[in-house]
Length: 395
Image (tube, rainbow, N blue to C red):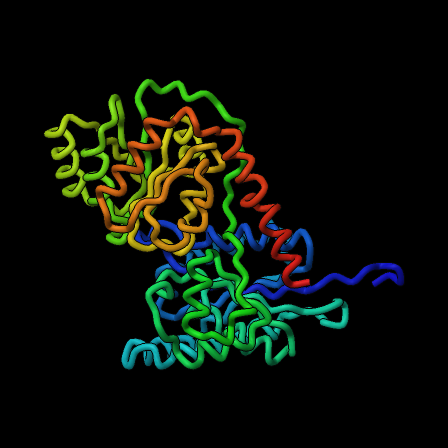
């Protein structure tokens, strides 16, 4: 290292890669942007915590993930070797359950430490748990102790919203952390409710999205398009979405339901119900990000009808296109729709409240300024804005 060269920080990012619900792709969408963006500011070493019971399902996804990491500025990547010890632990895990979960974490620690570069070349070393504490918290905790480094833990687990207590080991990890990065104000309140000692450690920071702010365009679709895009499962409340749309008094409108997880039988039933009520619903299934971006150009109103949302990524994505949103006050969305110019909050699991919010925006749509919504997104939710805030936290 040259005499006048300024030392950088070394960020050790601990991540666990899981398959998606339908098994078509790994859940790396949240983590690759963080790796890419943080490696622009500091040297980054990625440690993959691989669950044994997922080995066979996602081996090809891991290879893809490693290839994607190699295209970033990350300096190295470590993962446990899949040898005899892995096979033995896998066997015992199937026999007795998750009692061997911690040993798999320790193998990740061993693999990571083995490949960590010379720490004397860095101003400081920081360990960051990118997944929630119940996933990568323990591995990150052990690493931070071994390296005597500050620990930062992300938390985005929606189950915490309804918890009143947490495992002792999770509380120990939280308390060691310099900061806990909560993706919403509601989640922050829940963490503090579980452990009041964390009051001054929890910081709210939105998750990264790969959406970029677009210039406001005049929507030329003759119908009033209401859209919801997500990976559909019961807590997303597709039933409530469709019922609210059908009963809302909106002329010349159409509901676009985007995303996988809906059975053909469920689609048929909902389409029949819509037809009986002289309303129009279109199911698009899973779309690439590019196709979703293009489709959103025709959307007038985004809608979220979930029972729980830790953050509310769909809402942020809508804002990037200047689209107002109706959402249930189901956690994260309560703090994201923070001003009336962004949309309306409705009561969770309350069809009439959702209908009233939809009809209000429809009747007052001329008051929703796309440029103002896009400006709000640019200032608060772009990758550059969020990463700079995170860098200021850990410096």
